[in-house]
Image (cartoon, rainbow, N blue to C red; front, side, top):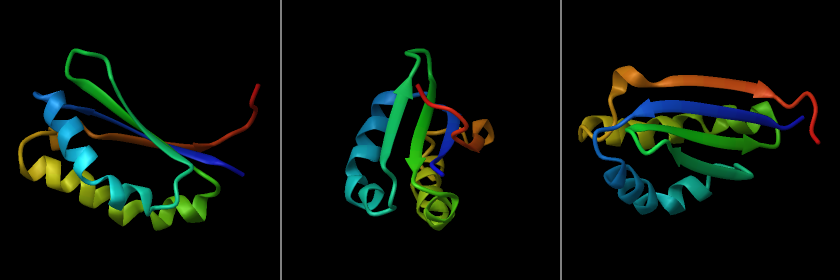
Length: 94
């Protein structure tokens, strides 16, 4: 069953988040996600929404996701204390 991992974060510079994430596109494309969307509310809060075919694929992608966030946290682009990670299985779709 398909699963989602949703990660909320805050950033002082969403343009830098976009720039850095775009620069890691090849790495992100290799993790096996059906899609990865980065969403911004325009006020410094962002969300990464990733859909995987199953929980095994999602778990295998964890270290790569940690690398992507880790680099941006190290550079001060993302506030590491703001990360809020949630995952769950699809129970119904319309």
